[in-house]
Length: 197
Image (cartoon, rainbow, N blue to C red):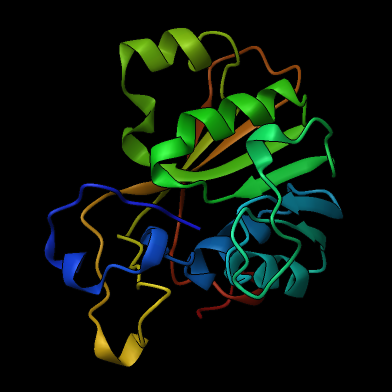
């Protein structure tokens, strides 16, 4: 699930309810193909299952939850109020306007691995550095070489253009990591075992 409140770009006419933008499959396959995730993962903003379905297809057991019922997983489950870790890895595309809260809560739950699909500019910001990056150093930032195209989840893809005005990356935290992050590059066109989607 991805929320983009306040945007004025050309996607605004296709804006869905609650700014619902499912994660394109290639973005999730790119992460899965790295082989860094454990067997059991938690997708706490699962929406219609776009990310959870790819994780499952890649061989992972997925605990899929969301605050809003979109026909996949368990709901209503408010991740930000969840007191327990439901899997050893948290993997999600958090709502845009709650990205900091999702990251901070995932860190507070002490997940061994956290993978968040975020705008590359998430690296920026003095307050964010104080609140998050200085306290929980990133293990790696995996940047997409191409712009990942999004479509509103509440509209027919055939009736809307793919769009994205932002660069995206997978931000990875590992429990106990205490060094500078590594930087890598991924392709949005990934499929199973690294094939072209």
